[in-house]
Every structure is written in C-alpha cells, then in structure tokens.
Image 1: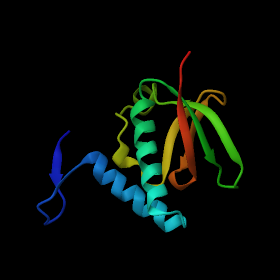
Image 2 (image 1 turned 180 degrees about the horizontal axis):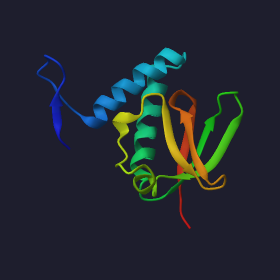
Image 3 (image 1 turned 90 degrees about the horizontal axis):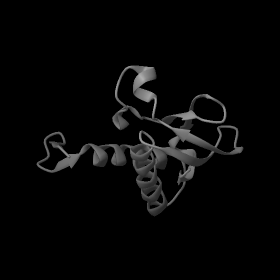
Image 4 (image 1 turned 120 degrees about the vertical axis):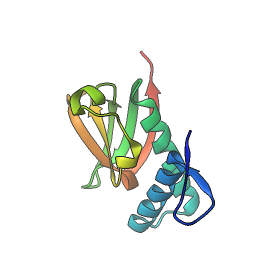
Length: 121
C-alpha cells in the first residue's frame, strides 16, 4: 500500500491510516464512546468496506431515529452503478452499500455502526 506524507510531517501514512484517523475524529465528535471502542469501530468498518466489494455481509447498525437495523449488504455492483471505483476516502460520515433485502442503495452513519459478519451461502 502506497504511503504519503501528512502535511509537513515526515511520518508516512497509508490511505487506510488516514481514513481511520479521520473516522476516529468524526465518531469522537458525535459520541461519548471510549477511544478503545472508537478504534475498534473504525477497524471493523475498514474491514467491512474491504470485504463488501467481493461478497455479502450482514451489517448491524442504529438508524438515525435510533431503531436497530440488521440487513445483508454488498458493494459488488458499486462500480457498474456509479461508474467509479469504491474509494474509502470518499466516506466522510456515511457508508454506502446495496441492501439485498430492500433492493436499493442505502447508507448508515459511521458513528451508528454496531458490527458485521460475512454471509456465506
């Protein structure tokens, strides 16, 4: 994975590290969760977004109204539908995915993420 410099710093960071740091900051601003919990959430979301272009995942999160939601999602058709590659750096507050049950593109806010598991047929 290619590393880039961060501003005037000599430290090199990967795209995943840049995104993880941004998400930690955003989740921290929106919640009162511990740093450990926020770090776990960002790692799990990174794993989810890396998995979904190749398979189906069971995703659990809270909707904006506070209701619990669990559904099967994928990004397999993302590139065909949006005519560009899926780029995690485009994720600011919401993760987009294709909801298999509802047959449509949906999003969830990163601070409302709970967990995910691969779906194996």
